[in-house]
Length: 517
Image (cartoon, rainbow, N blue to C red; front, side, top):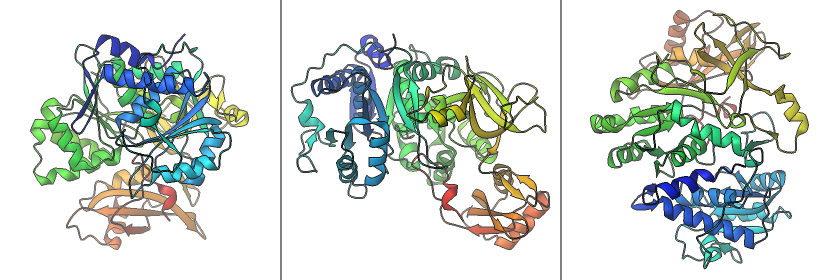
């Protein structure tokens, strides 16, 4: 028997009066978060939600996310977290595809009317019969006529509930993939998947209950990275989660200073943003005094960003790797050992990794050997929900093929070369965008770069770079192309450079290359 909600149950029992969540001036103890989650569980049971039923949740980084998330789990149901930027049509797809029977949706803001979009999606999904709007003020009325608010629904509900005893292999969470290669698929993550990944923090980050960390939560909680490494990882060891609903570099630095944050995790663009905001007179030494762990994942961390952050904050970024299908962490730079800049580290305890070819054959590692990374361990999903064919294609003999190309050095450290789908084939040569981006980032004029392949009549594909310049830089497109020609092989350097003020990004901070052309 195992229920992921035991992370909250155990910490509430041991550290009832310890701060669990901080949002602005609001501070909630473990006892308060647990009591509110129990109320949600009682609500679901009263409304007929059964163990194993799917319950969707759309909510930004607010205490409500954790409260509803654990309340769903306590009732023995499965959480289906949804990206807060989804529109009504997309919400309907996710509700229908996951067979959700209930839906909790935050009211949103004038710029992001989540409840209105949620209502559209709910109305288009006959199988989903319970809809609750989460309002910022629990006493506020519903922004959607005829729809009950969470505050109204919880009125009179008991803060006591005995968590349903689920099996370790029951589905705890269904996380939807980004859908870059088609319609999003729901990765079924079991209680043991999520629990083992959260408790891995003990070895990955030297987490201790007697020295609880204060985590800055800027990663979206609807995404696997924030959910596991921040929320579940913190709750597993009695830590405190400082929430920031939307990443803004200045606000993040301010909270790191105010709340004495010891643990920061982010995607590369967040680290880039923090470094860019330091010019405004931030007391870096005071932040660095408390910062114990800096972790990165989600996409490849540019080497220059890695070096700059360590130089300014005195903390080496531990880079990790994983996917929604791996709960998400598969590898990390090992705590207390040499950090190899540019590496995603080694497999986490209990997990195996290897390089394979298109036919699943294992490749013998070597300096020039590039293969697709495959992962095996207690973190691997049960499969894609209601998609046996897609599951069979992705998992073979308990090994999951990631779609990421990598190499492995003699000491067992892995390095991401690129996404197999992002690889550019120019004139018959394989070109990996990340390699080009790393080189461009070493130029004094370049702040951030994204490289893609564009159609070309004779070469098949041509290499194009989108570049954000450093403030005050005047390097022209032609000058940067000429410089690249000196730095890279003839088939690698970008022939096309376009300067931009910003790059399109997902809600999780990854550069959205499919929107570049």
